[in-house]
Amino acid sequence: MYSLLHFVRQYFTVYMLANVFIVGIYEAFIEPKFLERKGLDRDSKLCKWIGLFYIFIGIVAIILRTFFPM
Image (cartoon, rainbow, N blue to C red):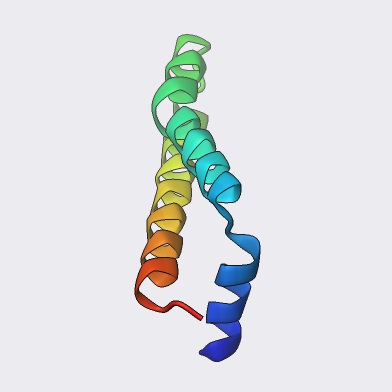
């Protein structure tokens, strides 16, 4: 558990968290619309889930950084 907390603390800086959120929002809400217009419905759904996963990882990293300081 300590190694996971150390990893999150070391690599997830403010800039990294902002990057994860921006990519997650883009992948979840903007990119699927472009893929649906091209007729790629399956890829659109996959892209949406990947974006939501990125947002989830960002939220978990913020919680770990906030409640388990080192």
